[in-house]
Image (cartoon, rainbow, N blue to C red; front, side, top):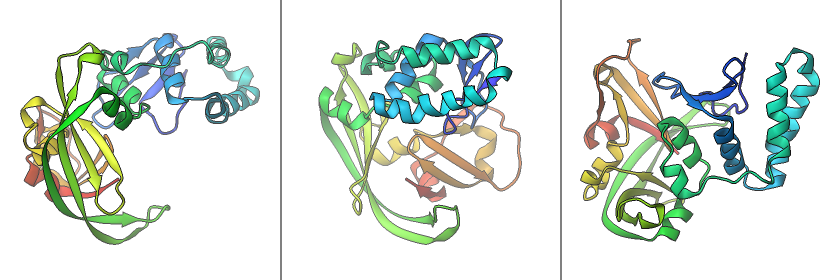
Length: 257
C-alpha cells in the first residue's frame, strides 16, 4: 500500500512493503529515490515550523484518516503516524548545510521548498554581480483556473555571489534573484557558476527538458522551482536532458508566479 501525506507533493509517498518513503520527480518520471523514515520526519518538521501549524496541517487530518480507515490501514503505517505525531518536539528540522548535502536531488528540492531561502541567503551574506530587466506579457488565471487575459509587467533578475563557507561548501556559490517591479515579490534560484554574469541565461538554464521535446514545446508555465510544459503533440520523452537559451525560454514562458 502506498500512502500520500501531502496533496501538493504527489511525488512523495510512503511504501508499506519497503517501510520507507520514496520521492520522484513526477514531471519527468525519474527513478524513485529511497527516503528513510527519519529523513521524512525531519522534512515534516522542516515543513511545519511550529506546533500549531503541525497540528492543523498534518496531525489533525491524518488522525481523522486513521479513525475513519484504521481497520484498512497497514499496522506499520499506523505505527509510523504515531511516531511522527509523538516525536514532533524532539525531531530536528534540516539546517541549510544539511539540506545542501542531501543526496536525492528530488528530496533536496522538497526540503529547500520548506526553507526560507531569502532569509538564508541574507544570513550567509551575498554580493550582487549583474542585473538584467525583462518586460513580460503573461497569462492570468482566476482561482478556478479560468483564463482571464494577459498582464504586462517588468521582472528584474540579479545574479549574486553567496558565501558558502557556513554551509561547509566552497567559498562562492551563485544564485539568481527574481523580483517583480509591481509587487516586489522575490524568488531565489541556485545557478551554475558559468552563468553568474548573465542573469537571463542563468534563469533559462535552471530549466532542463528531454532533447526530443524541444521542437514541440508550445508553452512554459513556472511556479517557483516547478515548470509545466505544454506540448503541441503527445511525444515520449527521450534523449539527453538539455537547457534552453534565454531567447527560447522567455519566448515560450506564458505564466509565472
